Length: 438
Image (cartoon, rainbow, N blue to C red):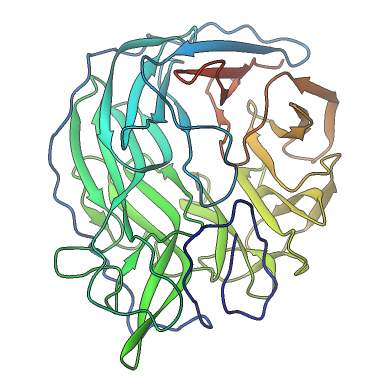
């Protein structure tokens, strides 16, 4: 992450964007950004129907983790997996579908995301649907379909930056498809419009710097949690500040929903934003990394989960439900990854891991375990942990594909885990599935 014109120390990821602008100290807006983002439900693209398989996929559980790697031919180009910075486009995302199959999205070189289905063998079936978008964020599925989170170009507006060089302004969208691949609605979760551009005071949008987002589903609504920019007047010019936003949208209608733990401005400055739904408490739970006292924090309450050090190596990771009360999150500082257990505020248990890199991925792995993965040379190292005690389960093992800093793993109801890796060609992706564990 590149943070501009602030005294606090923050991470810097390569490659550095070629266009920059200046941010000042974190603002306290006089009013929250609009709670009703622009966007009208509009049916659009369709894809060849591909109904998920009934029941589960019959994946066999073993006494130790085993990995299945499947090459998938996409039929079109996918953007490079090589860039790893927080401002680079995310190449692909996967989501578990009811029945054991998957939804797969990848970002093409044609300014479109492409959405398709994977069967129980992790092979593409049917005809993918194109979706207008210049940066893919996440996908999440339910019994009735799937939601894609992505960015699109937005208007610049009439304001002038007080300092720095101009860069394109973008909007963040949730797009809903049914199980046949027919688009049902789309909803902007920023607030750009024909009368409000990114450089106009009051705009909340996506700029060049870190802007990754994640989705969660509570059974009725989808929540999008992502890093965003806000524009504030400063005399005759404008300053742009970086933070995060969480917006909830009804899954059926595409209408914004107030409350439900949503907010217009949470951590600031923010990066590595992650969210999950906790049916036990009836709330969405979130974590971020922030240079506000350099820590891992809860954006909705401002509470510190774990204190960090401003040495340029503070990075946050995923949040998963603990086996009993609370959550686990993976984070790193000084190239040492930790697992942190917390409930409503500060961590009450820390687990030092063997992960000596800056970035790791944490995902639920069956009912009572979680899987931590991280880059290890040209491969991925992995370790299973008990999600109640935090103790390691078995030994560390290797997955023979390269890691990607921001491509996340997803859990499945059968206890397996899947994530994506670079394919052997520019028109393929590898599906990595860690099979269920007894």
